Figure (tube, rainbow, N blue to C red):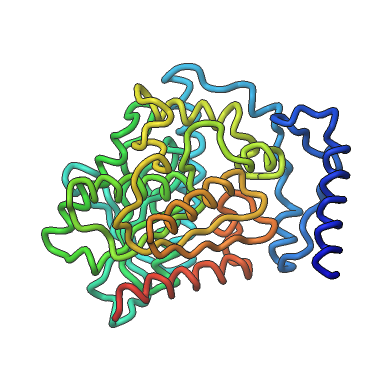
Length: 353
């Protein structure tokens, strides 16, 4: 009898749903226009942070987009100036030391935390900073490296890879591979981990896929934070979270223009820029993080499924109410501390055995 009631309930629900959608194009459903309040199911610190961040202006993101190299350079310079100041302030706050170097012709920064765990002194975090493939050059490339190095008490190297529009794909990926190959001359792959957020996460995937193809040892584990794994307008969250993600705001407009500058002459679905279309066979363990308001939530979820289907170890972490990379931007909140602690433990498990 209970089974019959369940079946009847499901049929009834189906009829109700069908009736409600009868006049709607089944291939183009409409989103509710009901206002979405800030999530209260978060820490007081994160709620306070969210309440201070302005809501994205989706309309404005469709306008005043740089149209030539000169305008892009001015756009990048303005934002990098702010990011460099944040990197300097963060380094001072955390007590990390940063030394600039060059490896295989690529600028890098050695980041050493105030305290290095004895068992990690010969290990290395290879940090790939995000920034939509255009931003966070120079000292700005050390921001998340400083955070992770401090929490994990591990030495790090931040790779200041080539950026678009002057250097479109695959320049960034190739720079990282050059540095990785040089590191392998004096270190074992099993003693290094790699990763970063946003573009940093996507590039870490593309690099690992290329290393596997070339039969070059890959990192012991990867950190992939809210990556854009598909350069086409694909995935529910690209639509559902438009206007909710207070960091990216919208995939349409400025984000698409930045992606176009990065993709260059390649096709948007090429695995070099859209790693979701590449192979995930023989991947190292992967730590993934995203948020319910992240424009790239679907990218992270799709990646998690692809990794699991390929038989890889993949840990997916989804935080309530968070937009794109809020865990790094709202640094110091309970959620941020929880994330970096969990990431540190994940990496530690594969570096120290």
